[in-house]
Figure 1 (cartoon, one colour):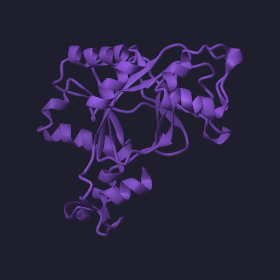
Figure 2 (cartoon, one colour):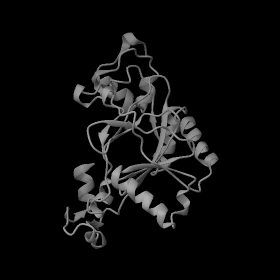
Figure 3 (cartoon, rainbow, N blue to C red):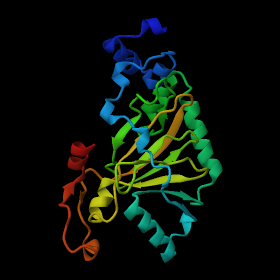
Figure 4 (tube, helix red, strand yellow):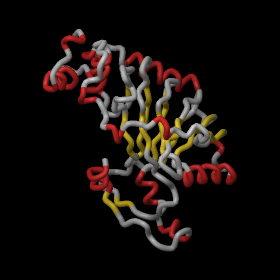
Length: 256
């Protein structure tokens, strides 16, 4: 499809959704202008003057020896202040992680029909593609949000583009890809269970103008019928409850 054949909104939905081409198919059309549907409102775009280059989230080494009280303290400090941290030397071979990323890139190179077969046969398929697009500063990527999980574990490739809200203020901090690292972030559930001690922090993804980005998130969630709220053990740290009890399926429906 040429630039002169940019589809109207209804045709665009048919091309992306009904025909299964997705945003990757859109990126392969060679469009010089991003369709209006994928342009973020001005107030939701990343203001690059708000990027805080002097700050970075913690990188925790030797996470596999978390029985060490000192190591646990470091983890807790990161969860309290940042809500995000990266872990290295966690026990998963780097080669395995690199194979996962490579498989993700290869998967999105498959024809639409082949990708559909994988999705139809695997309900847990969670690999995400952020295709390179023109005018990346305009496109949605993943808008600012917090996760409704307990904990999210993320494997990202070397393209970058993940930003997290700074602990105090309105700035954004880039989470640079680190070879062999996993990105861990606290979700809403754990913030509530910790009685606000650990922080579920806003984050967002900005797409790249020249390279496709692949990430593999794993969301650790309660069961739909689980009821959760502040743990009695953490009330010793703060002697009153910040939050009430929630049924997870209700919470997910409202805040997802």
